[in-house]
Structure formats: structure tokens, C-alpha cells
Length: 163
Image 1 (cartoon, rainbow, N blue to C red):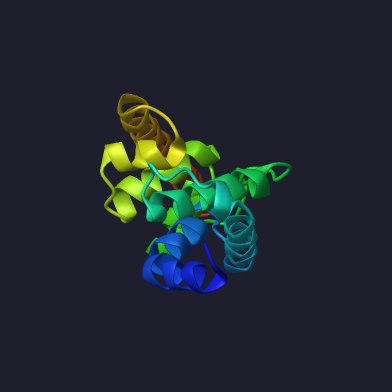
Image 2 (cartoon, helix red, strand yellow):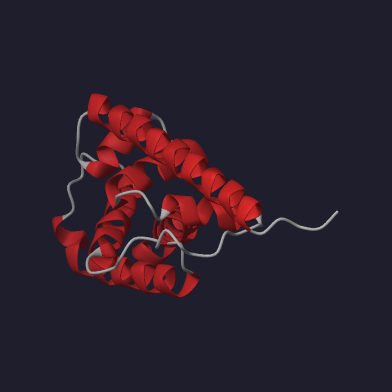
């Protein structure tokens, strides 16, 4: 695959690639590095690419693997992190509490609209396991939002606003 072919491929699927990187990392600068490294890997691995996998799923797989690499050595969102008010920031904070594989599965399925079979192709797993990862991610997000709400209530009770 020539450089021009890869550029055209990224032009066609750049929105998907960026969405996964941004939501899986929760940070624009880190997402840019992830996409850059995935692009470098695509150039290096293109001659040996598994042709049975659609090009867009192959690109997403490279991005997901880079997200996993980027997540190593990072700590989860601390429990005492300030509570975000903006819905997008709230979701980004919640997603960062999930393991990367669950986070990627949820982002691809729920935000990007990929079917479980496509998520499975990206994550190199079975369709059943991809569905399970999405369900586990949903449970993790619900647990996060319950903890977040409990913490907000505790803060309001500890520091009531005068009427």
C-alpha cells in the first residue's frame, strides 16, 4: 500500500479514527499522538495487512492498540477529582474509569454505531465477547455515575448553601 493510498484511507475514515482516539484517551493531545503513532504503524504494517479485515476496522484496530499502549502507566481518574458540569466532560471523565478494552468497545458501539460483529473484528475477539465488553462498560459507567451522584450529595450535605 502506497503512502497516497494510506492518505486516502485516512481521509475516508479519519472521523472514525479520531472519534475512537479522542474518546478512548479523553485528551486531545494524547489522541493526536495516538493517531500519529497508529498512522506510522499503518505505513509500516500495510504490506503485511490481513486482507480479510476491512480497511477501516484495521485502522481502528491500530488506534485501539495505541490507546492501550498509551493507557499503560496512567492512573485512573482519582475519586476526589473535581466533578465536571458539562455533559461531554462528565462522559469523558466516566469513560476514563473503564479499562481501555471496554472503553473502546463502548465508544465504537454506542458513539460510533458499529455493530458487535464489527467491534469484534477491531478488537480481534468473538462477537459474543464484544457484546459482553459493551455490557461490562455500561455497568461500569452506571457504577461511576452512582458514585458521582453519591459524592455530589455528600458535598451538598457537608456544605449546604444558605437559603
